[in-house]
Length: 433
Image (cartoon, rainbow, N blue to C red; front, side, top):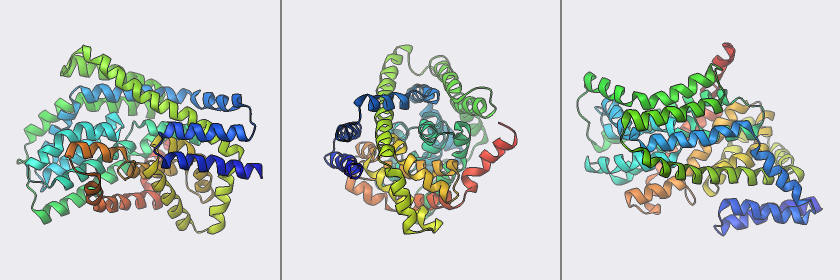
């Protein structure tokens, strides 16, 4: 009985705190602490589980990836990526919409953050699209939807968090597993944008120029090389994800301050400050979520949920629908890092029980939570884009309706077609990486 009541206290207090708009870190910490005290578990065990959750070599890659994204984002790479994307797909009908999607794909591979994406790419392209005759709602919707690509395209620090929460899952395979789903999201968004652009007669860009394409590619190549350094290092086994991330920081400093030179070295203090704030939030969430997960396991809540879902149905299709619905709802109300740490121990055993590979589940999880970032009531990307476009949350939510459906198509493909997530990792295995 005490375990049952403990579970009610843990989940009930957490949901209450979230409903009261208490910051997620404090909501998790408060519900965990009260439950531990009720169960008369020594508090030192809760602290120990927090420390254990942070004591992972893989997590050392996160600060380096965050710092790399901040440096490259501040150093003018977004402008160069937009120019390269414009030269590549700008001549198409609705060219700037395609530019927006493609630039987000490239920039996401450097920053790994949808918020950073919309803050830099969106701040430039939303006004540019408005000036070119695009509706503000459509321009903002394209920006928000395409920002989620960076969560799948490596390097993604959320993939590292998932690898830690899932246990023995290869970070290298997770990185490469996200490539095709990230491209798939970009592709379905471009198809939808093309249809809307033809229907609304949105303008084309300038005529295609091979010379302009080459010059803009060369100009943006040094920034794009950051992704190549990370991927080649990790996938060939030359270095770990942490070592590749450290090399990426060094390269980002060289590119930003000595090649592009759009900002002075003095800006580094501000970059370090922003990176530390982001890192503090993420590491705090990892620590307190580890304690929350430990209490969940102590109360055997994951097992109860697994047996409950499996008791409802043994149909794989329906179970996957239930898991997606759970993740989508959680993504609407919680921070992404904490959901990964809390939901993975609960849902991954169910996924394994129905034959889903942990790598495919990880990609499905990340894409679900990416949709949550652009969904009310807590979606952080939604609020950033509202500030940039000066549109209310209500208007943005209505404008996002078709984009939710389009991204749902990509989610269905990732969920039910393992090839999208598993083909590239299978190639890595075949060459012994």
